[in-house]
Length: 386
Ligand code: SAH
Ligand code: SF4
Image (cartoon, rainbow, N blue to C red; front, side, top):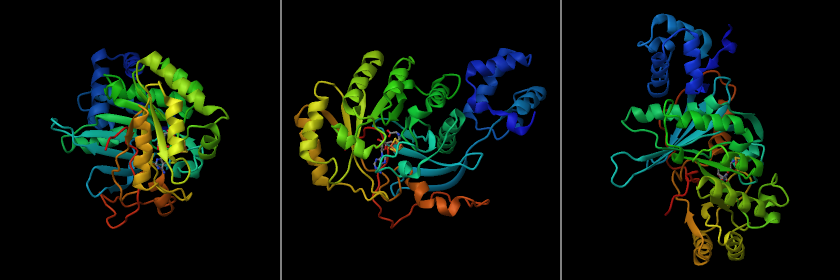
């Protein structure tokens, strides 16, 4: 078996690993030992799994890899609440992962949310999104999605903390990489693998209707966020060029179906862009569209990117929010964390990739806040209230 025939152990669901261990003639508890070591102890090699007999370690090493992501760059916000990582996959692909931490009242440890990428680049072309402007590079495999969480879990473990939430809001469109995204969700939530509660996971989508219905039928309890950005189809198509001609009404219906099937309310994300979709009249139209849907709206004052789309002034954001609230729409404005770092997914790679791509030796820069850099950005955190 050559190196390229070996698959990542982090791709295997517990049942699949149990089958391999049985095939190797080993008792069942050995599979549990492998799973515990792999998912909670960050082994660098199978040799590190000392609790296993040498023959089993050798068998596993012949079939599987324990490939982890390589950290290329780390940027932290001044308050330390947001940490953004540029990670390199084993084939050299660069992607971004963000850790967002919030103090939890009454808890000893902060809420630690990992924002994962599901694709390198994205084919959806949203005009205000740095990832969309890169174009599509490739889908990430499930193991490459979960390795982002494992990387952060290791950092947190060193300080006695742990990952509490995962949001699929990094680079790429998760539902355009459906099978690998779902496999990643199952790996992250299986009690015998990473073991996170399903309700602690949120998938954000630009709104692929068929995939939303498919997700609703998976029997999962994950949260869903739909990136709406506009209350009418013409405006939405301008901001999301790949959106279909009748997307807005279809998305609201899909959200209703998702709620009906899963019992989980959908959040609509709305990137507020100066002079584009931030008018009070637009807010009224949005309120009419969502009236009675029970949906929650998360307003995201946009991060300026190369496309020249800017963030509205604060009073415009507040006016937009007020209109929605007065119309009875449940609404929050995303808290701005990491405002001095390129915290919107896709931005760090866009800013930095030229100096990294193609270099064989990259020096790791441990937490390197770019103090003084006053670029306004925000984090892709889910539904944070002010
Ligand atoms: N593709 C999925 C998930 C990744 S994008 C989606 O579009 O939902 C995650 C969120 O970040 C989306 O709501 C997206 O609209 C938002 N986003 C993208 N670029 C942004 C920017 N420059 N400023 C603020 N939010 C941005
Ligand atoms: Fe892709 Fe989401 Fe960016 Fe749109 S906002 S280009 S769907 S990553």
